[in-house]
Image (cartoon, rainbow, N blue to C red; front, side, top):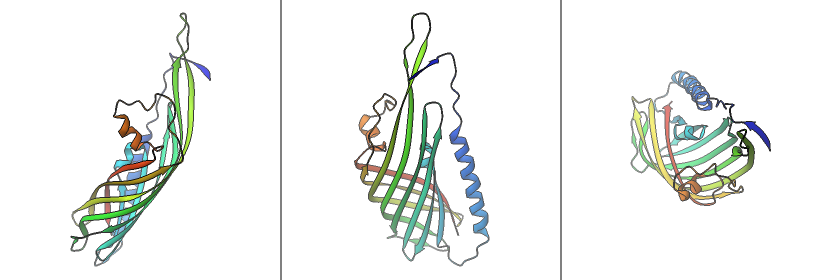
Length: 222
């Protein structure tokens, strides 16, 4: 523990802006490459998760169609580094999708049911400050917690694909399943966000039990 003068201002790097910029560059490169590939039927889909950006996570997925079903594999990285929080992690997911009402011309769209298996690794360090000054000088004491999580999960989602101009697609899915975590929740007030404690527990990486799952992604057919 050490002392920090409260008059100093902590500047927070715009990690989100960096992640969004990098993601747009990667998606542009994929689209340029995909336009060079000619095929009668577009059986491949590269997508980028918009929902995961909220957690400073950049996740890409690849789906390959086989008739009225598809196999999706995704992978991502979490990166946060500022004055009160730093995170570094990876995530992966395998999902088998069944399309009972497949609508297909040159692309595929419609409702699907997707059993999935997922994995997440996260190294998280949280910094927080408490008042420890005197009547003559305002000082804060800095403390930190570090936790490492390994999560394994599985469940089912229901989703829908909406194609745009036969090239792009928005995917919306929600569901849930079981999740097991090897880490424990940090013992401080950082996660007191004002949101329902039960909801925070279910989305926090330390949670073990029945967990919800939701994702919105944008992709490109080729």
